[in-house]
Length: 240
Image: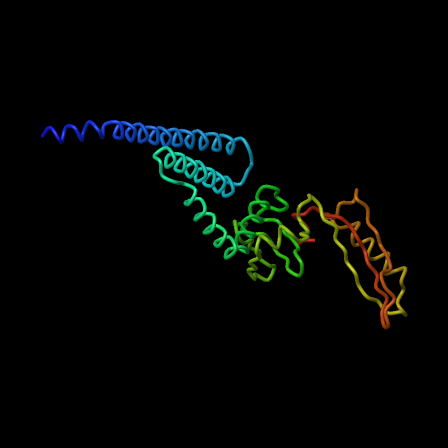
């Protein structure tokens, strides 16, 4: 029995040190949990005051929480005497491998975040991108979905859109309407231009304050192309 108590007394400093390390680790994790709650509250308050996209806000908030907890775990492990250098090296190698494997997907996620933050277009607007066009139905983290006028659904990777040229057709309150027709060379060109001008100037949905322009577009092999331009509101464009 005396031998047991002697050994216990010898273990005393080690047990005390381990208890203190465990207490320090617990305090670190507790502080990290408090920080996460504060960050979540601040992000939610900022979201209510701004027009930031909720998907992006949740994604960034989740990423911040993971980062805070990961840092806290490493600090807690270090306080317990667990070697973290090898863990960091292992996670770094694994992260590099995963990053290379998911390179295109990560590029699309980054593109989706940029689109949601910068807002080059919004849901419901009509855009042109390369040889595709349509009304924006959904902007996700990875893909943007368009609906064409003939009801075809197009899915485009966000990485391509964020690095390409996008024309937002309905981004403004008004649009220019161009109408071109072909008439024969024997036809009365002056009369054709007069009819086109009267057509636009008498239309109730054409914005007369923006002016109407009539022009000769092209002298083709069998016809003369005559055109007219005028502006209308974006919502009335297809009606006109």
